[in-house]
Length: 218
Image (tube, rainbow, N blue to C red; front, side, top):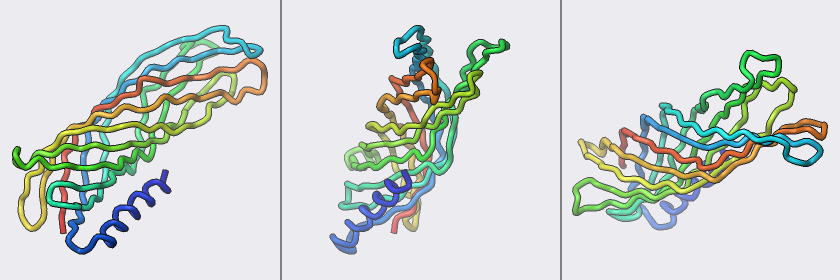
């Protein structure tokens, strides 16, 4: 994922250098309040055949900071990359609670990165539209009675948003925006060495994010 960030940043500044000094670089920091939901199916296999399944759907809210850098290619069009430097976890799912075969499973999201285009709508003052492509690493966290563990995966998807940029002075501005994202399905399989194993399929991953940013343009 860090390679994606480096490539994205290099791409942005390569365009800046290639096109000329008329472009406008902008740096910013954001505070985010987000909500995510998904459905998960735990499948149990024995000898290669599925013998049981359990489906759960859940949602959770979280807060995190992010940073971004963007380049204005024209007065009304910019491209940028937004990066969340911290991780955040889903609530823990507990099966067979308080029994000898109790299992605990949750997921951790890391390196949430969005490469985006920002289009100003001058007829509506500081209003802008945003269209982007997001990627995130999905890490499994589990405490299984069997002692088995699950692997990790990466998911990606489209992000769309609407925002308002209020200019203050000396290149500083305050932004408020809302975005929605939809992510691809991911699968995590246990590392059980026997014919009996489990698999978790996560689908219908969507998220909504409200953001307040301070930006500085040069």
